[in-house]
Length: 203
Image (cartoon, rainbow, N blue to C red; front, side, top):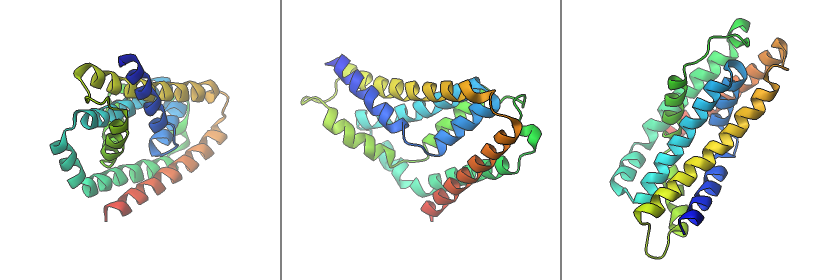
């Protein structure tokens, strides 16, 4: 049963991570511009955020869930501002800022920012709670099954992000400065749009 819950958790973690969104773009750009280390750190941060939400859902921490949902609007606003800032900075970055030898973002900073951005979507708790309600054994989650389920979500999400980083890294050095610049402009514009949407959700 524990192995089965681990595998189901991994499948759910993969399903949550796979859709393209602002975090996907952020990870791909960091990998493309800075290299695989910031990319992996960003992926680990996203997986950690998913794992924390999964932990809240599987343990039934109603108080924490209510707190996060009650502060949903300011969290969306903060996430929107940060994404808008990243997008505008990316669009108007100097060519030297997007070169392959640009200063590398620290792994700790990349990880922390990814965790915080992932946690700025409190309704994710509801999604995790709904899925875990269907996954839970009839007697409910014991400590071992809860740990296996959350660990599976973490592992599945991390497997996806490692695959994305590997794919981007494989073509990174084949992309010239001009193409890289256009990629940055498009990615920056999309991040800015995601930021504006988040800000709109907070109103």
